[in-house]
Amino acid sequence: ETFLAAPPGCTSHAALFPAIRGGLGRRCATRPISVPPRLARWMLHGKCMINTLMGRESYERPWMIDYVDRPLAVDTRYTRQRLEWATTPGLHILERIPILMHHFNTRRAEWQARNIRRNDQKYEFEPDRAA
Image (cartoon, rainbow, N blue to C red):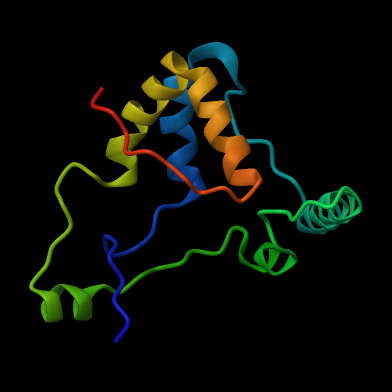
């Protein structure tokens, strides 16, 4: 069986951007910078080629570009019914963004080190500490 442990529906970039921007204050653009899909595709292929030449594998894959700006609405009814499970209140991404942004602002070195490990495909993450 396959279970989808996520809240139902989806969260758009349009909903995420204001929440993230609010956590960054005046250090970022007031609105998203839209990149045409063709340009994004070329940029991703370029990144993959450069990483290949450097002997590194890119986290992003070319097939992913086809899913940019497309909602991935998830129906989790089967999982909830079969496992008699429900998402934990307060853990929806839009509710967690302020906490994530606090960690980003106060633990910048740790945040960057984690991203470097992810880019190098070293997924040895320690559990998050309480805020």
